Amino acid sequence: MDQQNVDKASSRTARPPLSEKVYTALKNRITRGDYGANEKLPAEKDLSGQFGVSRPVLRVALEQLREEGLIVSRQGAGNFVRVKREPALGYTPVETIADIQRCYEFRLTVEVDAAGLAAQRRNAEVLDDMDRALDLLSDATGSRLHREDADFAFHLAIARASNNQYYAETLKALRDHIYVGMKMHGDALMSDGAAALEHVLGEHRAIYEAIKDRDAERARSVMRGHIIHSRERLFGGGMLDLSM
Image 1 (spheres, rainbow, N blue to C red):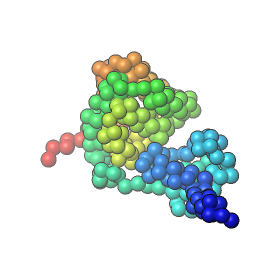
Image 2: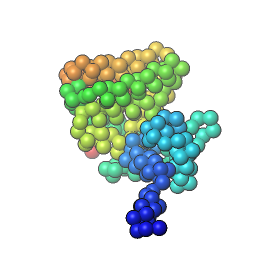
Image 3: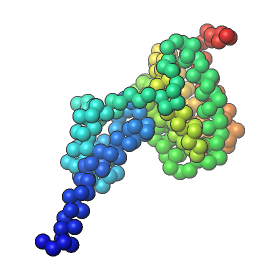
Image 4: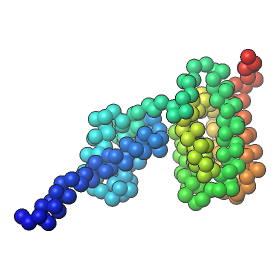
């Protein structure tokens, strides 16, 4: 074999296999928060199409993620993220009901401004992300359920639509904290019945429509109202005095 062929053969063996590239890409998505803890990964056929590989190649990558404890397979349901990331901004865990109230208070500053900016800066791609999350919320509402993953995905899409990474990164760092409030709020909604779930779905749709219409003030207003109503449903008249 001449030197040129040796070099080509060496180059081919040095090149990582397709499964390794898919594994690395999926791992990066998980660790940076594109897929949250306990969130379901896209179906195998969708992932195969995204990466342009066969399903056997994809399954090698998924098996490597399973071996590392990053995902877990649930029979008949698919693959779910197993990793629990530490909050990137160093927020302490939620320990008391007062912490949940503080989280709502903080969201009223961050998410209201993010919604206003999203109305000014959004593009078709992030509107599609919001629309998909709304579809999931609508399906859950029709089944008399509340999906915290779809709820959070909707709010995160709005933060991304602001085109300011600090809003999105802050929400991702607060994911576990926000989930606690969303889970408790969802339980309260399901106890109150179908009308309560439909009302909250309507609030989400109103936010989407304001952002779609590029109405920044309305987007801020409906987002503020949505978070306040969520807090009120959870706490009722029992807001805590957080004075030092």
